[in-house]
Image (cartoon, one colour):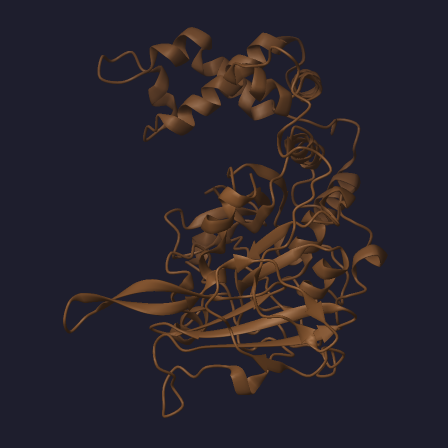
Length: 458
């Protein structure tokens, strides 16, 4: 369930134009490949810099056209020196924070890791049954039988719970053992077919269940009601199941200190209005989900599906801020010292402040066209003002007691970072192309903070 607008829109500033950087759903691939608005050019890659060479998503660079006065409530940016000390505990004074490698203290209310696991639950199927619980299974069975009987009448073959579990097992198997066509799993030739699949269920029965699979009762809805539901939610047939599945993920696991938010791409070539096209993906046609992950274990904590242009959100909240607000609008994440890592699609001063109100720390790369950044500390990619590799600067500003640190670093390209806690100098190796040798150069600690802090959060 999405959070009420009045609970989350306060720290967010009014914008003038809708974000142009969303993945644009494509509904008519037969008319030719349509590239979405979010294809980044080379210059945008330079903004992100070398901190993320394996980035997965194609994003736009003009999504933050807000009110020019939106971020003027931040205090003046003050430059400070980044010290070469190791991780320690920093203190703040009335003149500003001391510049040390301060790490936010983690004070979890619940022991991080698996929780609410019944005694004796150890096998993979038992763990799976916690997430895909009996209520989901029984609902799928009940609604599939209702839909099948309304369509087929007496000829419908009743689905039992064991049949449904076998049906799901075949779905998983097909995702691992790929064949050009689905029917090949039931072929009798020696070089084709699968004994595993054929022993569970025949092909005709599988296709029958697949064509009538339902989670909600649509037999009592008229065409107008279906059209309205479809208009409101692109995933209306599965939304209750997706919501419960997301809740189950969080119910059985308490996060460690390090979190991250990113997209999960689900390969999909069928017709769907929320389907996206991304030419830089291995699977160019896909459905997308926004996901909150535990960075220490890689565990998926929460998610919700990307709805494209039909997504319902308050008009004054940009698409870049909405996923963060939805996924972290839960009191169990607040005031315990969590650290959230973001990429430059989500990072902004507005989202840092929203998280800071809830005492969630943040770090991430940031695009230089975000409102409120100090232009005089933004490194240039070319020209006389280009900095030497390894150059670094740190400035901070304060708003209502919340501090934002803006770090500029020159790697092979400029990299800019926004963080709610302090930065210090570290070292990294870079290859000199002409001499084919490695050299040591300084870097801000935040760029590898996830790997370093993952051990400290346990």
